[in-house]
Image 1 (spheres, rainbow, N blue to C red):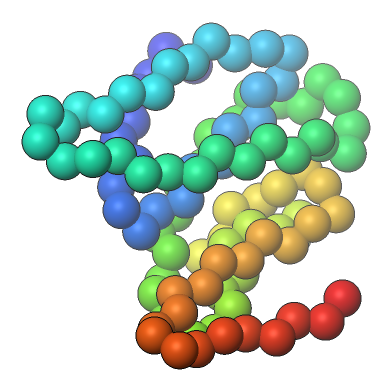
Image 2: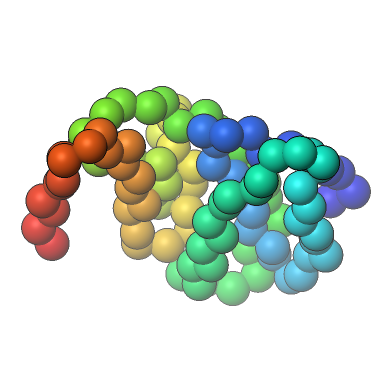
Length: 100
């Protein structure tokens, strides 16, 4: 894409590679540790257009928060697959039960 970006704490980023993409990741801080989770999801069809999206995760404690889905939504990245992606910010001694 010929671009670069910084992912800040509390953000989610998605990239559809299309027919291929070259990218790199690095920690720009010389003092802070970097913690991130990279998830690869196989798209439902081939040869999708190159696409990039980044959104802020609206933090709420002790509940599931939808952060990625097939259907386009304001605070959710759009995933080209039949999947819902959630996160949770749990406080001490809390858990979440989720049934499929």
